[in-house]
Image 1 (cartoon, rainbow, N blue to C red):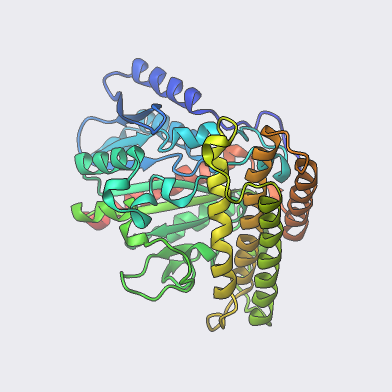
Image 2: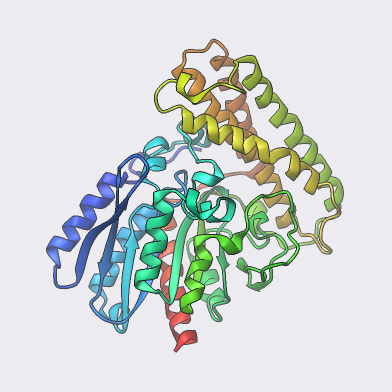
Length: 422
């Protein structure tokens, strides 16, 4: 599970410096500006390439633990500068990192293994995620990162917004707020050329319509959710804000480690029994992490009593654990007709990563506090990471392949969305 040491995700500072250098080199085409600040006062930067036409807005870094978006926006910006055809009638704007505070806490810049990735892991609680905050919070409570992103959408009125995401282990897929006819073919071709499996029935889009393998279209508002316990309303996220200007959003996911188990469309022979097992495991593993919370007194700890930087980690761990009971109940319901091997494998991965992430973030808090329970929790995190890797036969996707596949998909989405909108 190791890979070359040069497989390095650039930091936000490195991304901004590269964008600044590009803007200085080509001031005729590029402009870099600050569009807001984070809760901790970090700047939010927007790089625009092109001088005329309708806008494509590309958002990187919406989830702190998904760092591939940073190198992808740099790659895309450089390609748009080089290729005049991409700028014909189109301006490109790149939000370099939507959550720089979160990026500062997730420190796995060059993960050598799934364990190494989780030893430095951070993913904020749902209400603190810029894209998701409007789906779970009233407007007056939105974080400044959300307000900055919505402000840019209102200013640019893009015909397409693309949000760059990544999964730790699995395959690639696309979620669309409105269909983009023609996208599925170039998406599948790119994945095949780069040996990246397509997650044809991801748990993130369970029950959604599809326009091609791995390309999922969000259902209309009011449609019954397959996992009703999840608290968010996707139609209130920043993804849907572009609809008021006639636009649409594509969310492009690419894996760090790939597994062919999520690219198997064959019917599962016993999906209900498999999901019951996954449900029981999720309950059991979540309870083990909950027990550590109570043993260490962190279940009800006040944030001001924590070491510096630990409060977001503890909030995120508690939030992840809070999702587990409802999901365990959801997965006891009869699965959809024709549930595939991929569908069950995707839920299996979801069920493994939820308590693992909570445990990993809690471990960082305990280590910072020098708590004697930390070594025991560290062994548990290591065991779960090893089981995750072994079961899914994980293989590292070279960083250049992650970036290339995501970039190709963004460009294909822009071309086909432009044709659809003209």
